[in-house]
Image (cartoon, rainbow, N blue to C red; front, side, top):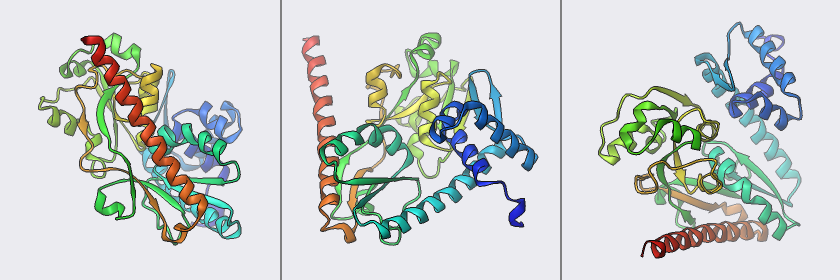
Length: 319
């Protein structure tokens, strides 16, 4: 395809942000544009492609099948451009600390806490690379990676942060409307799911019901998303019931934006995996990288201590 037939980078960036957030408003906030500007960009892109990329519903935005396929391709292309740009910049600026992790870990756990590290280490500039592919730490000049993987894949020098457990989560309004008391009640709900079953089987409803040894009912509907954090954001927006991973969803549960309708008793483990902080060999002697890994371990330990305290308090109240 000649270059003149390719959509402009601005249109692709606007579409990618809107597809990732499933919101023109949030995409506009990210790109410093108005909601209407993002909407016009998407309309222009749809006109150029000759297909509808989004289903526009009242208070909801969903990707069409064509939109899902195009989003994956555009996301991968933009990720490659970002990685190449970061690699060039990292080579020019040795003071920057490049940290790589998955989109969901960055969005739900790391970014809300990152200000604490920056407050404690104001002299360290952090560049965060959030994407779901496994990056080559040396080739892409990444100093620290946080990966969800088995111990063997993490390597002998990796620092284990925490494991994951999976449980149904939804907005308080959805829980009240559906009167969720047991797993069978999910037949009254729309179920939200990450559309990468082969890569993340522990985040599928089929595996969760099998783990609970309960027959999976036919839900009122099923909506699948191309990113795991989109599933959680859709649940917060009241679009259905999602499978949330603890502790990534803890802040949303603690704030009340999400509710675990069956409590913590119906959780399934995320297989024999955990989140690990991996230090690249090239950064093994970098004080900034070592400080960041120490901070990750400390933040993970604080979370575990807080959860233990809550469990102890609940146990004492029952006595």
